[in-house]
Image (cartoon, rainbow, N blue to C red; front, top):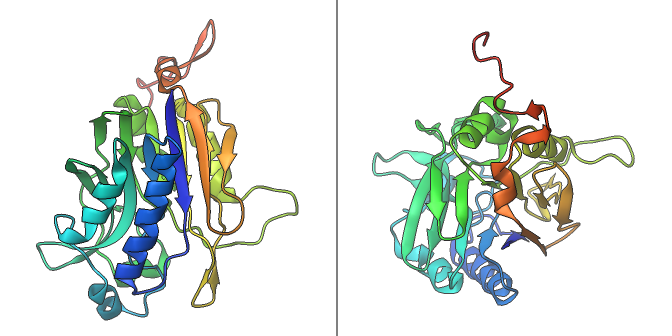
Length: 265
């Protein structure tokens, strides 16, 4: 079994040092509870509601810089996936996520599908998510709005991903009473259609007037929510058997991958 944790945090816009400390403490708490994989929100180091590109640039980090030493120190034996504002070697800003462990950075992914005003600040990533063979399973990292594109989630599943780990910042949208957020329903469907585990880590609180959904969830390969953070800063933890994701059958004669009509589409 693999123990997965989502650390739903409320970072402060622009307060990078404080946010690093906050997120490092959350990683340490998750690891103390036995977590093998810890996922943090989108832009966990910087906050999200930037006024403009200059403000984002003032909070940007390089993935090889010392800012992530605290995450590595807190990681212990775990793999950590967290969002950050990246200043690339090309001088451009990216909405990125880093996967790392105590030995260093495993991979950096730059969000390829930018949401709304992100397009005024960030540059789209030029590479789709990699499928990472880690000590705690085969993980694909993507960020928030990427999850809305089945072309991406199906691709990583076909390439062997057992777990999709997604830092997100889900703005709160109206929904009928008693219904789950639409973004969560998409994540549940993605898990079921691909028979993968989904770990989606949202943020908490209100930032510059923007309330967040606070919808951090862990979803099993059948598409059911097995842990959620609920409102406010919180930790969602669940044990999952990633080997279940290797079986893409629903019945004796139903296989979600081999039944695809790739001769037609």
